[in-house]
Length: 245
Image (cartoon, one colour):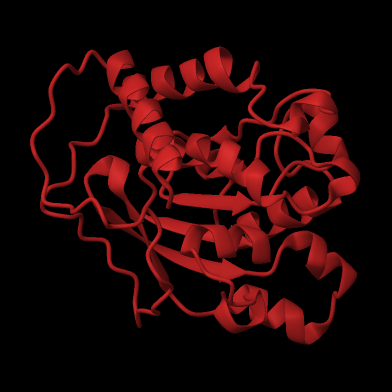
């Protein structure tokens, strides 16, 4: 990670802390060389134990305040990259701020851009069915994307667009503190695990994301196919793989 990117992440973290009235933090043990997303070394089972120097978790009211301020004061008016020039509106994400389960996609599509909500098109309908099959409701999880504006023609976000927008996602994760993250598709998985390995090799195996904004909290990550891909290749084998994931 280059120096400019580190400085931007630190600045956004300090802005979040200021909203909470925090004017001092304890010294942690994480070294500066540690990356936000660790190498995708698989773990046999998810590990829920927080890091020993993890910051205290926020209460529900404070989480809501932080997320709403980030959306209203920063994301909705964001002009960090060229995606702002063609969007109808931003798509911050939605769900329970205390959710145990966080779904992450790559970016909004046309319907999401029009409505300002994540995963509300055909892929969203399929994701809703998958959530319901897990005996959960959409309101009990949180759903977000790496970039908050729709890439033209639903293309994959460019590296500079991801770099400009990804601080928002990191801060969402640090605020919500889910117990498990499910990445939907290759772009989201590659970003969260900081890898170039394809989704077909990564899915179905536990990996880890280390959230330095929470003092090194480690969150299990399960990659799986994006619902849009599943709609294009709706085979019994692919359906079994996603359900297994």
